[in-house]
Amino acid sequence: MKTTPGDNNNAYWRANISLLSKLLVVWFVVSFGCGIILVDWLDQFSLFGFKLGFWFAQQGAICGSHLYLRLANEDY
Image 1: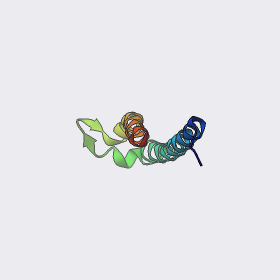
Image 2: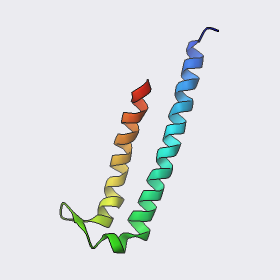
Image 3: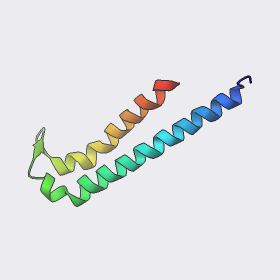
């Protein structure tokens, strides 16, 4: 069976949405868990002069975006 460009596009978007969904779940759990629920406990530590709870809340989105871009472009 010959692969058409439409089949390749569908496979790409299926993989892309799957990866994005998984990363959003991880981002939510880490951001909500570490940035809100565990913030008081994490604030006793610091990273580059910032409280660790603040770091998780602020930098988590940037790190997640970078990870998504690296993983999404790996196969295509």
